[in-house]
Length: 332
Image (cartoon, rainbow, N blue to C red; front, side, top):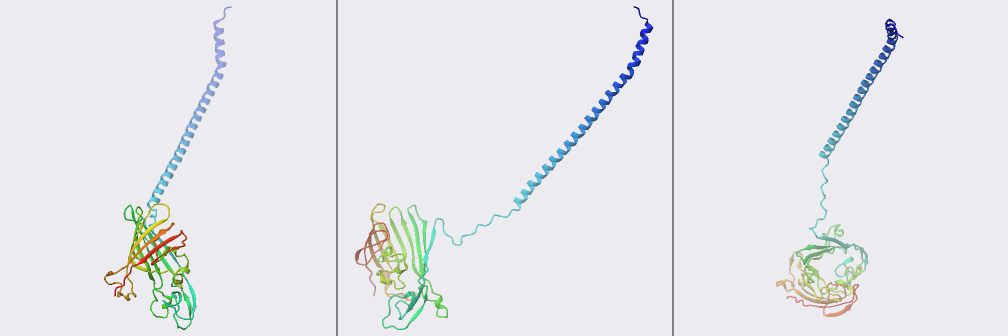
């Protein structure tokens, strides 16, 4: 069937006329969607930019705080208090040297019906015959202290030590109202030792007990101290300035120890004769007392002796035999 061209043209025109509103509406919606996407993208960009700015602000704040903290630490380190100055010891010692303080306090309440030799109170020893008169009181002069030094090195084998010992029997300070309460210290011992650990040799120089006094046999108790009334225990001896050489016979071996001691001490006849000078007959031309002692003991090594006899003696450290003699010769 052959169609009329006019009819076809009219039909196309009518189709276009009907489709035009629909096509326009679709195009408009697409434009709105595109605009909405554009707005969303713009808002997202603004939001991302704002978040980036806030994040950067937070980073800047953190960095600033860290910088301030570092600066504060630096300032604290700069103005910190200096380290405390090391306090000097109240009692100084040479390197390697040790000092030990020893002693005891002795107090005596006494009542006596006559005078005693050497003195009264804690200085009493033997009553004076035919003396009369009562006396009582309280005495602390027998208080004693001593310092022991050790540790000083001279060579690889030789080391040093010593002792200083005092009591208060040096008299009283004057004759005033309170002089009795001011007893004067008295030197007992003051010596230095040189010890050789390899050879078993000891050299002692200074004021010390003579070789006749059995020092190691003295029990550690106040009842064996000479004052008061202590000479009754039967031990004799005294302290003199001098020099002693002590030598182990069997140094380093086991079993009993044998030892030889040679000593020379200042003579003492009847006292110095003067409180500021030597005037005794025992000192001219240095005619010293000469002593020798040989001792054998189980464990102890301190030399002791008694004049002109050899006697076994009980000792807390073992049995001891000792012998010695005094070759002192006073000078007239």
